[in-house]
Image (tube, rainbow over all chains, first blue to last red; front, side, top):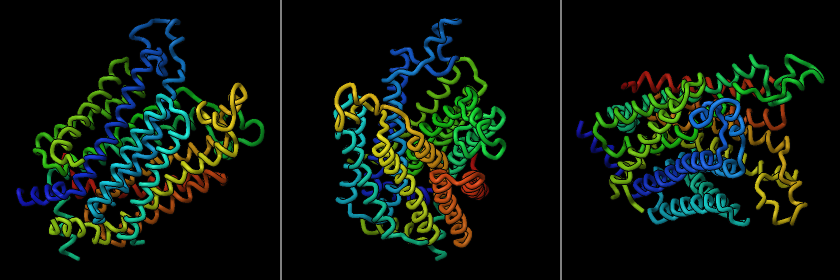
Length: 159
Length: 159
Length: 159
């Protein structure tokens, strides 16, 4: 048992893998934060989508007026979906990239740009900042993911 | 070749990793089930979104009346999206957590609560059960994921 | 350090794992392409959702007419969401499957069918091809994922 455990721990001891673990956890926690922001806006704007969600504070016909969309809620939800669309590729391609033996310096550069880009993207979406703030931060994360995918395919290609 | 294979098999022989593999597969299969439930409601409620989907059973102008939204279909779709938003973080953070060397007992506790919470969440959403059933089951899965993220960052932090 | 690195590189040297890395990267890049196609249709159809996105080419009240939904944009977005719903399970279950020690021939068969099915699904959705093209390509990717999940549970089950 302890031999196996040591082997697994070696993976998490590798610096590139630790960097991947750190930045992946950060961007996934950031994505999870979108759920809380959505809930905050749904409650403060009183804009719900499920009838059972309004039943706690309002009974009868009156509750129906809270079953509506709100621009702020919808904005957070779009940011959340954009996170899913971009963080899922990072999760998969980033793991394979971390296992493909990149230089630590290069790997850190990729991970830091991605995490910075997604955090910037969230601020640009929620404040909102004028374009091209959101567009550029999206593009930075996208480009870094493509760069990692290129390294993975160059190292591991097996069709 | 067989030396490498043994090394890989050792990963899947580790009990924490096997538990992660089991519970991840269960929650991903549960998420995939949402596609079938959506298809079931689209067909029984005759509520489609793509014109080519109605062409098989209905021709011409008459087909347009089946291009509509249905409350039951939309409810399943919201449950499906909520799965994506919560199971993707579990997939990534759970993998890193399993590699960070947790106690088997603690790891099993995390994985079981998460899987139980997501299955309860699905029932709470689809029946639907009165709140706070859905809210609490969502929060349980969320809290467990945060707890695993804390362990990952404590073990592997490399910024 | 170099001993650890060698250990990690051994993972990426394993042929089944290299095949997983290759096909996962391909389907994730394909999914990322949906973002570019959405952007292309939003710009050519002038159909935006965020007010700040129209400000660059159009000022004042006139800009509001470009805040609208467009059938082509919505179609690409549905294809993108369907990718997320199906590629996320492949990402997780496929990784565990690759680590469960399958035969190289069998693993390649699974990965190739999945990648082929998702590429076909995208063409079937965007052209669009008459049904059951889209339905069958969706079902092929779904069936292959279930088959991999069965192998994972058979090899690793630890409840």
